[in-house]
Each structure stands twice: as structure tokens, then as C-alpha cells.
Amino acid sequence: MNQHERHGALLRLLAERGRLDVESVAVEVAVSAATIRRDLDQLAEQQLLVRTRGGAVPNDVAYDLPLRHRAGRDAAEKERIGRAAAAMVERGMVVGLNGGTTTAAVARALAARADWGDAAESAGDGQPAVTVVTNALNIAAELAVRRSVKVVVSGGVAMPSSYELVGPLAGHILREIRLDIAFVGADAVDAEHGASARDEHEASINALLAAQAARLVVVADSTKLGVRTFARICPPADIDVLVTDDRAPEVAGEFEDKGMTVVRA
Image (tube, rainbow, N blue to C red; front, top):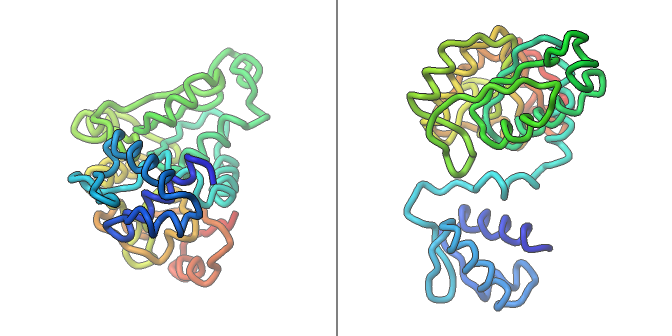
């Protein structure tokens, strides 16, 4: 396990348990106690936790695992979901993407579409093949260097855990645009409750992004299915397509029973 993987594991354990003990975590992660102490010190410097005598506790802000430490979880499934979602996009479309590791996979798959190539080749008139509207700083940065993609970024205040822009400025921009299709990632997706997020500010902007789309596609790996969390993004009736993986067929079937189209990547 490298340093990046250890940091992600430590933050996940802290989120689950509320406190870490150096000696016990060292045994669990199979490294020395000195290594765990250095890891905790580095995470404390990033203000991701607070060091205590013999361990660590969460900091005072609402605790959520930062995006960069979630990226490796269920990576293969998210890549397949990303490719399946990107295949729904046609040339000339305006596409919405909120923040998150699964929507980041959609963005990478869009950028890798071999049938688009550079702008001059793909459209014939020098125009981008697709326009992406996003409130996620990491997605915007990744797509901005692609000549085949026009990137529009909402304003707003950056959330440190997700890199999403939220608040009135983001809402002002999103209310002025229309999307052909929106790919929305969520912390939880339930057949009765719909899609939801842990943070109410993110949920509010994600709901607005979803509402501006002619077609709403929720992208979520199977660990998010059958779960509810704090703030609802949209009810199930608003979801046109759910793209997920094939690890929980029974749970995915609940969405099909509701008349929703489910794509198992």
C-alpha cells in the first residue's frame, strides 16, 4: 500500500469510527506505527484531521472524504459507467456534469471519444464537438485542454471535499442555460426517494443542473444504490436513465420496477 492509498484508508477509517489509534491502525494497515504517525501528521497539515495524543480525530468542519482520496474506490466500475454514459452523447450536444468521481469518469470518457478528435477534424467547421457545462473545478481543468470540448464553468464558492462550485453565483449561471443531457452523480440513489447528497449546498446546485436538462442521467456505482442521505437532488420520477455497474442486480431491478431505464455497465 503506497502513501496515497494509506491516506485514503486512514480517512475512510476515521469517517467510519470517529477516532483513530496509531498502534491499532498500524496493525490493521500492516505498516509501522512510525509510518502511521507521519501519515497522520501530513493529513493534519492539510487540515483533514486533528492529531491527538496517540491518534487522530476529525476536524471541526463537516467531515467528508476528499475527492482525491475517493478516486481509487470502485475505479474499474466507474470507468465502465463513464464509457457507457459518454456513449449517449451525440455531436453538438450541450452536456451537464456535476462533481464527483463517477462524473469525472464520464468526463474522461467524453474527452477520449476517438470519433471526435480535434475540433477541426471532428466538426469540419472548427467548432467543438460538444459543450460541457460543469460546476466541478477538476472536471473543467481536465477538459479545458481538449480542443474538441467547449467548457463552461459556473461561478460559485468551491467545496474543498468535492471541488464543486456552489452558492448563488453558481445558481445564477445555471438558470440561464439549457442542457441536452445532464449526468449527475450522487452520494445515494434510492428507488423511492431518488438521488441525494450529503451536503445541502451541493444538492441544491445539482438539483438545478438536473432541472435544466432535457434528459437526466444519474451515474452511480452499485454501492450508492438503495441508500438515502441528507439532501435530495431529485425524485425518482425525474430520472430518465440510471447508469450503474452489474454488482447488485436485485437492487438495480427495483429501479426498473419503477419504469426507469437502467444501464448496467
